[in-house]
Length: 479
Ligand SMILES: Cc1cc2nc3c(=O)[nH]c(=O)nc-3n(C[C@H](O)[C@H](O)[C@H](O)COP(=O)(O)OP(=O)(O)OC[C@H]3O[C@@H](n4cnc5c(N)ncnc54)[C@H](O)[C@@H]3O)c2cc1C
Image 1 (cartoon, rainbow, N blue to C red):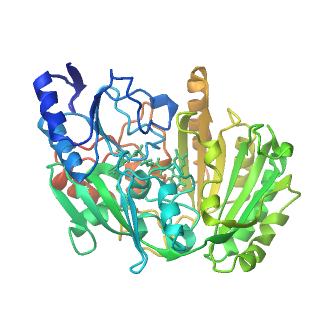
Image 2 (image 1 turned 30 degrees about the vertical axis):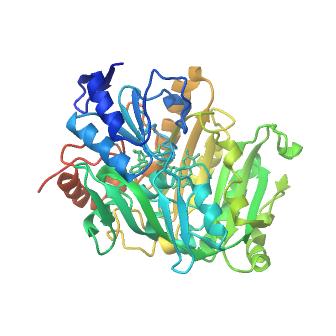
């Protein structure tokens, strides 16, 4: 067997049997060539546009395997992708002509209830963490879809249903084990390797492969107050005005967003919303008394005349997987765009209302998130994640199923984004980006702002050859 792989400089390298045997022997997990389609992929890429298998995959079973794979990539100058949850919207963990370092077998989650910490391996998905931590009535704030990877989400910041009260996923990180480009294994925390610790809290996968995350835990659940109110999409401009008024005054226990979409006519969904465009006003109140929380959320249920109202006290773990059905792995083609707003003006709401009624496919979402509280309490320079002031973020989660629609759907997403630049502050959330013909550095200047310079220096110190470049890429910039 021979395998030809793309190198980081764009050239191709043909690997002989001997070279592959050497790597295969060094790994505990299997080394799988792309031609071996008989061996199922443990975790395929989420975005169907990037579904092809990597030319060669190292399925890692632990940190030692990751070290071997990184050393191999570096010594051959290979372009290497790293896969955690595989939920990169931009397909950054796919590498059809190169090497994939696949952590999807590294899913361990260990809770220490006394110290209120959870240790999570680099390939775990959010649902696995919520499940284990909820067994102790504890949580660490993660995202809203249970199959998203902890790794990519946290390294890029990580918004979710608890962020106003407890901050971003990266704000709750207390320690990480990282395999750097030279194959060294480092422990990063406030006291050990503080530059690396600063950089991985928002700076993405640029600095190495994180094999273990340790997060702080908080007491939440098992039951929380949940609002999920479906209003007719025609009413979205009025609904969103009322929602804005509520969200601007809501306590930090309330994290809320508006999603517009068309639910499929799926069994289990109420018939009244089958194939019906809706505006979903969603919120979680994370306080200890769910009934009291429901009273706080009540105004969200009275913003208009709902088609259907799912609001009720609910297990936190159920809330965390309530949107899963809309985002099947490999089920959609996707290209997302997002931007932050300093103010959600009436004109911005009217533009969003127009765009949400002009979506290119039923499963395309137009979302408005209220951000604040603990996210804004962190100094913009305290972590690499620099966006600490904008109260709103808008995202166009453009999703469709037919490859013939690629061009039109991507063009719609870009033009919707352009239209919103009139109301936005120019900054973007890098975890919600498509890629296509855009360079890997796209958006990093506005997303990182003043932090980009420090990130470039840390990248130069830890990964001068840019071994880890399939990400929102930070160019190594030595002083
Ligand atoms: C359906 C869906 C829902 C989402 N919901 C949210 C949400 O609620 N909140 C939010 O903030 N974001 C959300 N996102 C965005 C998501 O956080 C990013 O796409 C994130 O990068 C996914 O992480 P992953 O590990 O699943 O991805 P992957 O595709 O595995 O990787 C994404 C990037 O991270 C790098 N990476 C992965 N694992 C590691 C590792 N162990 N060490 C170093 N680098 C690594 C990869 O190389 C790649 O550059 C969502 C995305 C999708 C598709």
